[in-house]
Length: 142
Image 1 (cartoon, rainbow, N blue to C red):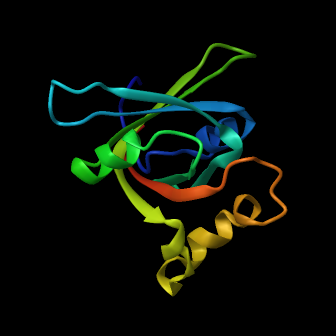
Image 2: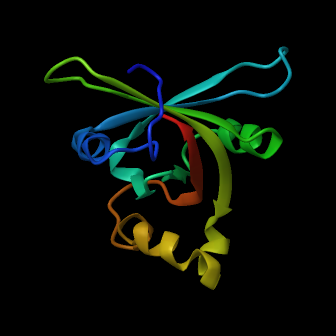
């Protein structure tokens, strides 16, 4: 059923499918209608499934910081996965975001999160950009 949540937002089948994707998009918006909705494509390599109701991704220094500003203002986030190959499929995750700054990852409270992103945080990471923060999203609807 479309947009109907039964049990936890993410099923095992959703999680398996997400792990096969290469790209995802996230959208955020300020409260003011004078400002723009922000939509960004991201590499799915930086996307982590924490549990059935929580996902997270790395916010890299090479990009703008509209997402962080919007999250701090109102928390609203939407994540979109689209099948670029195989049968057509779209998965939208709606929820509330929070920001964990890179400096805060040292805190014992964020130990599990830091472990999830160990590969991206390591000095051996080939990317040109460092992690500025981790965006954590509690899924309200999938």
